[in-house]
Length: 579
Image (cartoon, rainbow, N blue to C red):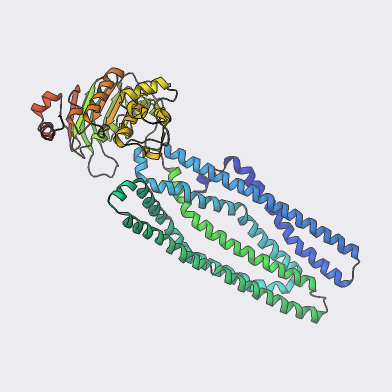
């Protein structure tokens, strides 16, 4: 896990190392200052001249300034290193997610991925900051302070033998009790983010059904769960402060009592006032270093769960990979399914598709009809290799899709989904996802063919109209037409419309299909639809049922041979859809 995360440090190794160096300098000076101060106190008591006092005072000021500079520089380099590490880690995770197949993404919920990219990385960043700064500083300060305390105080330093074990034991017990609550929080963060995402995305539905109070209650329940766990954990961790103060005051009382006794009884020969002053300072340093170590332990333990969740994303191997010698050219838009069976995971009990044998010639228009759950979408998702077949093969242009370079294959296939995604930006910027260097005239042309030009021209900004995130400021039909225009701009060899005209009327649907014939006659067009009118003029219509191909033929043949097709047709005629 550490090796996986350490790869993201990269160019921030130097600031990390500089932080360690300057922290060492700061600690060494901090430990030496009480030693020099004690010597100064003893010499003043012995009656030294003012020049010695001034020289020693200037030396102490200089050491304090150097310590301050070391601490300041360490803070800057530490901040740069930790923030840079978090940036690289976030970038590495995002890049890894981009390489995932649909099957990989199915393993993680979108809200969980968002939490891992935000909250979890923040925790890891904080831990890294503490590791390269405080986790080095505190042990060094502890060791040097104990050494100097015994060097100066001798038998007086035995008070630490009692205080240190008590404090260590107490801090460990506090940390162990708090950890389970901290671990529970992360899973609850996922539920909280899920509640927020669902509510924001489905705000229109929430308001349409007047379910605001229910959503508030659901959000409140998730928020209360996090609050309760954090409160419990923080209440336990809060014991650190009184425990620390008790040990510090106990140590101070012991040192002052025994030290005063030794000064008086020995006349300053065994222990003098300067040593007592230094011992008090070293005692505070020792106890503060232990306190900081306990905080580091808590923070790292909290972050350990975040580290595991981040590593799960980074170590997840994409299930779809390029072959060793991939094909970089798709000859045409022909599609052949050979004995294809498919299920979404190895552990799935049933196949989504079974025994699919199908041949689609390049340039054909193919319609796919079937009830909900008949695996129409599963069938077409195998063509651009969004999933790999479980058995059999899918060929595009006469070559198995698994032998193509993935980007080459997907550049040759354009998919328009029923719930396709528009991104925040102008209409032009969204359409140029299909072709980055598309001219304005090309954009206008495809929008005309997709029947989108009319409503675009009605906007004051026209093609510079800003689309909100998810396309919330355009209607469902407008969004679908923009997505169709985006796909047309790609000039694909295969165009797949997955029920992507469901939100437009039949007249507009007919004009869009007419545009396909004029603009991309050589492109293979595969149209999944619920309306017979959308596919009745197709060269071939596929009727699917329960993951299998029930019938194949044209409109007239299926009216005679397919009971499912005929039933759908009669229902839609009776409902006036054709009219």
